[in-house]
Length: 230
Ligand code: ADP
Image (spheres, protein in one colour):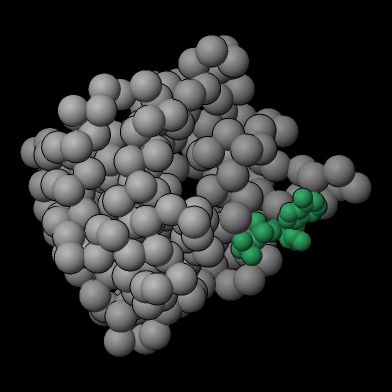
């Protein structure tokens, strides 16, 4: 699903953000990518999203070699990745329903499919009753669940959550993690990027530790792989 082979990323000015990264995240896995500030987590994420390209080595996502991907294939590659950004990136003037529907409209999905799918994903994240609310009327945890619903709308094989506990109350952190676990249990690969070692430690899942731009530990503890699709 996601493969890094001999990956190095050097930013202009010669800053080596990542080096010697070799890893594979397989279908159905639940993985924490851990590291302190400046370790290289965002760079790792940007390489997967093709917002940055590797200076050396190969990053493969859902079968696409991102060093060689054609411009026309980029939207298809991206559709295979559901991303929940730390700052949620919701459109404040659109309701929860419209925020999710918008993600489908931009890919020209017929309206009748949107009418079926949006309530389904909002229900999946426990927000059916807030469909008509605007983001500023929702709590941080609720906004995050709208962002998660939007990430799920195309049934992506991979969900990536960037610092999912960064902008919400600590008690809601466990809630969102449980939701991600439930999504994983039906077969979606989940990658959680976080600096919160304590939170990750509570889950018996694979932990990839990044320090000073490279993987210093990769535990497969209790990593059971789920193999069904939603
Ligand atoms: P993290 O997300 O773990 O905090 P980053 O991937 O953002 O780490 O950063 C890794 C290293 O790369 C840091 O030293 C950071 O200052 C540097 N860096 C990140 N982005 C850029 C950039 N666009 N230009 C130059 N250096 C960068």
